[in-house]
Image 1 (spheres, rainbow, N blue to C red):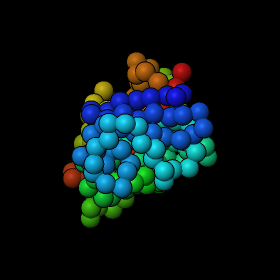
Image 2 (image 1 turned 180 degrees about the horizontal axis):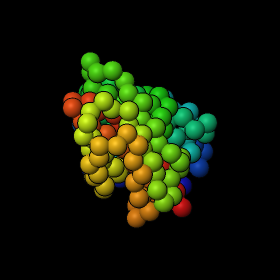
Image 3 (image 1 turned 90 degrees about the horizontal axis):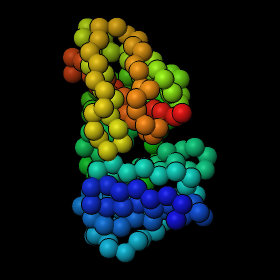
Image 4 (image 1 turned 90 degrees about the vertical axis):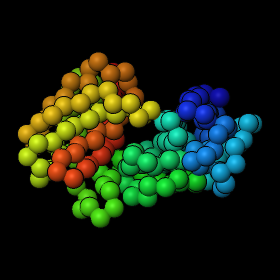
Length: 189
C-alpha cells in the first residue's frame, strides 16, 4: 500500500499499481461496491481507472486518476460530490465534473460559477462567488466535513488566508439568499 485514509467507520487504501481497496461499514455506499453490505476484509473497487491519490470524508471516498479526473462515491448529504446533484448514497464511483471550477447546487437551482485562484493555493486563495445575494457566507470545509474557516462578506471577490491550513483538499461553500455554490480546491506548500 502506498496510501491509506480512514472515514468514520471505513478505510480506503491505494496500492502502487493504482488499484483502490476499501473495507469497513458500507451503510452509505462508501466502499464503492455494488451493495450496502459491510466488508471487514479489503475489497477492490473495480470500476475505477488507475488512481494516483485518494481521500476519505466521514461517509464518502474521493480518488484522483492518472489523468487528473476526480471520482467519488458514498454519501452526498452536503453536496460535497461536486457536479453531482443526487443527494442519496452513490454506490459506484462516479466521475466528478471539473471539481476545481464547477459548482454543485441543490435541486432546482441554477448552477453558479465559483472561481477559485490560484489552484493549488498556498498563502491566500481568492474566491469569486457570483451569487446575487447582498450578504454571503463563505465556508471552507476540510475533506472530513469540518468547517475550518468561515467568512461573511458583501463583496463578490474575497481573498481568504489559507496559510494555516495543512496541505490537502478543501471545499469552498458560498451561500446567501437560498443560493449555494460549492467548489473543491487544493492547498499545497
